[in-house]
Length: 308
Image (cartoon, rainbow, N blue to C red; front, side, top):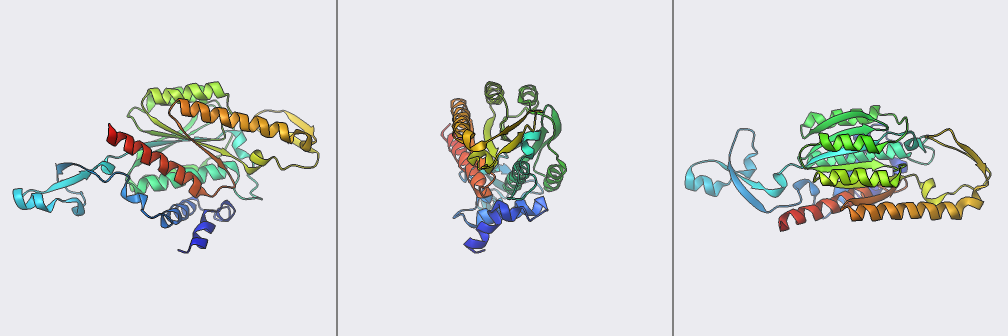
């Protein structure tokens, strides 16, 4: 795959023309991996951990033939990457995620977020990791437990395709309950535009950390929310409220951008204080930025496990 072709597959405007979510995810992940020097499919830690006795279904390539010659018994070499990660994707399905859904300028926030979730699920399963999906707004609308079974990815992508953003966002009660339900220590990935109270968000994310989960936040914003490109008199309508404001946007642009930057800075600071990875994304960003952010996080956490 040529470099130019790879980048075209990662571009949100190109992805918007591909209606099948599973195809989008496969093209993005395989295009991303093609551009890497080392494939993440083989795991992040390749240090030998231990032997265990062979059982039917194990891959023959992991048999330790030297041990077989000495003991006349089949043993499998286990490496650190074979310890399956359990990842739960938390997808925000509130109404504010609908912005840009007309698709005139590429992917809207929700389509971009669903594509990101599908890409992460595809990548995780290729690494033999277990991945689950939670769709939420003011309540949990779907809780699909993590699994690494091949058929599970099809089900997860199907649920993403069926999702429709609605209602408001209430992470407080939703996340506290989920933190109790996700028993085994694992990875929690939040994909959201974070249209929530910052103190509530911080407290609920820290609740996952107190349960010893690793947490990554993908903060998805539409390119319009980053740049505020509006020029003429514009009627702004609330997506999660009934409020409407008719205004001259050029007079508001500087104040809006300052407030937006201040909020993003506070989110980043709160995440850093809690040991939470924060990955800001625009719908104009190619999806490899998100995957690279995830892989950088995983490599750091694996090195941390090694040191301990």
